[in-house]
Image (cartoon, rainbow, N blue to C red):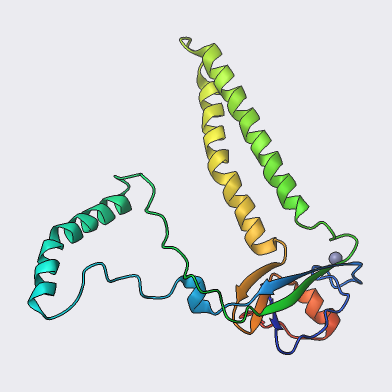
Length: 217
Ligand SMILES: [Zn+2]
């Protein structure tokens, strides 16, 4: 989807053009996004260091003592990856105590016309409708199955259960595809200097005479 990059240092005004259809916008939802460097968002790369490193004998002895611990951690890691241990992972390391020295923010906005003012609602409604439909289908399938249990007339019940299973697997997939490719405008990336909005429709760029910054321009 086309992306709209908002530069913190050169903020361009948001024209009142609907980001979904390019029509005249009547609503502008503005908010501040806190800028941060990409490395801080991913947690940095200094996660290792459980075993002290050093060439001196003390470090070697400590390393040797910790070898079973390290092996146990490895076994735990592998079994957790295989799903044998289902208990939750250890809590994440606490955040560094020092706050960012300069919490820059970028003002972003989503502009919408009257028709697209509550664009996200359709996904919420679709999700809720899907949930209700699936629950109803399962209740029906279970009721029918219980009624025909022990009789020869189980074909319809089996078909109902299979349909319920297939739709339970398929519908969330369809919904997430729809959301991914036709969903509302979201903040896709935040860097130190920019905020990138994703899923801004091409018609917005056509109407404003600008070019999207996404990969598929
Ligand atoms: Zn619109």
